[in-house]
Image (cartoon, rainbow, N blue to C red; front, side, top):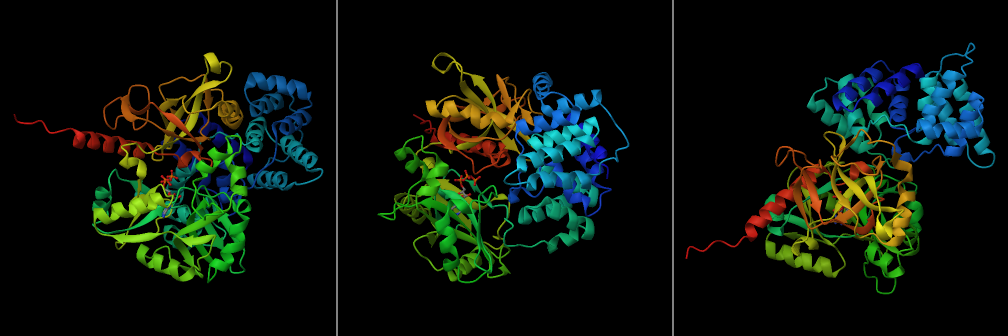
Length: 596
Ligand code: ATP
């Protein structure tokens, strides 16, 4: 495929905000592709070169790209910078300049494969002289591209390719292009993706062997599985009811979710909730896991929490951060404070895939394979059949430093549901007991200039929840409390890379902030209650026509959810469930009117 066709597709994708149309454009783009180009096109369209978990980065800074555009077009760097101020982005500037300065000789049209290979070369350039090498490759690439191609190539290297296709839309397009487009086919494709986290791999299997061939994609050490997620219920009684009167309850450790892959040779790789490789932060786990896991290769999951080295007590990351002062950021803390990993699940046991086994069987496997020590332990668990024992277990969990419990279904069908949130796992936090609402992880999509003491800075932020069905970010609150001076000072820097001149197409809101941001940064907030709102768009129309859900009196908890990407933020559906739970709670709390 010529790269020009892909660029043309991107142009059309950019012009639409309708998911159905996006799916159609994408599916037409990928349909004619073979097994070589298909994964390349899929990665490129997400702004990637490889599946996201591999963490391959281009390493091209703005200044570097500007230099390349200047060299490729014969303009002064200063003038490129000036023009970018007007055009809004360097990609558009490159497009304009190439249109003006075209010196098209007999250059061969660029193919997708060539563009992909060159971009790969840019990413691979490391160490001394690499900056120059990156610029040279980019200049050559731009020298061969049409103005439209140049626009998207430049945006790609800068990490600002905004064609708005996220994973869920790509899965839709794959189902349409390579299967019958049915719900069932779509679900099976998504399942394969949840297990492998690699859209390119899934697409190639689908192309070669059809939907039925997707079963060939199994677990592989080093390839993270998208995590199974929990629903919530407002009371322990309801939790038990949901589970059919019986459940395994476990301490809910308040730390960082870790998926540990222990290879046959003892090499360990750790992945975060959003599948980033984080092993380097936890050398003690890398050292301890091969000893703690009796049989390999194995994939286990657990929560990593700081431990007081003297008392061996669990401490929440937040607590430790507060004690040491705000300046000490969480990343550094994780490097300095000793941690323990509390394992709660197993997916691959000594080479045997066990993710499809029911939870009780998996727990037995986990107990058999783990040799507990200081750093690697099993999550504390109890089987409960009544609310009293669940409540006393919750008390134990809290006094041991947990933030609540996670109840797990023991029923047939309680397999590991990769990437899915369901009632097979239900979280119940101590806060619910105190009548407090659960925290919400909101994505920053806008900011408001501060006034008074906060003049010259941002004073508040517009937050959104995610709707995976629509692939949209819907605003639900404007938060200004809970930020200290240091955080307000650093937020513009944290948000910089997501700045946008206009409302990003995937953002839905009735509010106009002073600045827009593409969905990127996730903040944890807590509020007093959820209400209906004419301007917010979360779960729009679900409770009342024309009304969205809004969080009243929101407050930043101080916790950046760097372990979550924007599509892992709280969903509109979860917000709606919280709203319903709150209404039910209000009804049950209303004292019965006495008959006199
Ligand atoms: P979610 O993961 O549901 O999107 P979240 O990341 O905000 O939300 P929580 O609401 O705290 O997390 O609840 C689920 C998380 O609890 C899991 O992802 C996991 O990191 C953590 N956790 C702690 N202990 C356990 C346990 N015993 N079993 C399962 N998960 C646990």
